[in-house]
Length: 300
Image 1 (cartoon, helix red, strand yellow):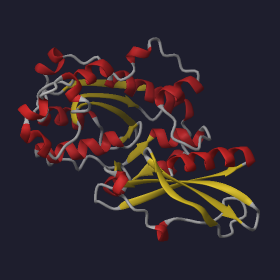
Image 2 (image 1 turned 180 degrees about the vertical axis):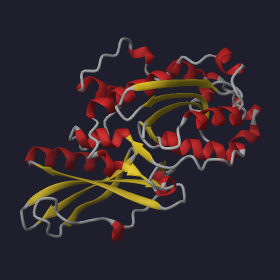
Image 3 (image 1 turned 120 degrees about the vertical axis):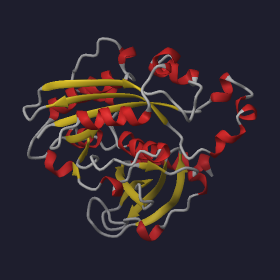
């Protein structure tokens, strides 16, 4: 058994009008595409059972959904038009990646969005042979728990905390470099007994997709866990949940232990469409409580 750490880079239409003001007028049908991010680069690193790197893979893919490379993507990744102009077709690139992954290898990535985008892009391009997407580990989730962070840690911050040297920050957001750095983080924190608890066996039913238009989303309060993280007694919702950027936040009050709790709910979807509620509860001291309450007043 080994591990294959993958990283992807995408082309999309984020802020495209900033660079091409008439883009949507000249490409009216593009809004109807059932894809937000098109894979244009694949990086992969293979580790053996001793956590030693044995192989690496780097591929560019010629885009067909968004044929103009967004200048913003170039700014972030350094990918140029000439890199993808002679890139592989999607089918050939996926065949190469599939061949790179051994029968008993576990696929890994930093966060779940890369593995989700392989499935989404494959559906868009009509690539049906994805049965090789089996066992999977989200290294970001594993790293966040091992390093005792309450909120998801970024790859850059994980490298800093683990004192893994990055020669040049500009090398981040290169698919192969990011896969390599992710493998170094994984190697540093790897524990064969603990990692078994983080293997996902059903990729299609893991919470991997961000919900669009959260402004219109209504929380199902019956699905929210109102148990106090300190005394395990029921809490009351003092401040109803409100949307703050990508997550909902509320304030809970526990009469039993007289504590105030910042209650965050992050909602994602599985690839089968099921909504999953991920909750974070943080006890607040008096100063923190006043600060959070003020934020709610500003929103109101």
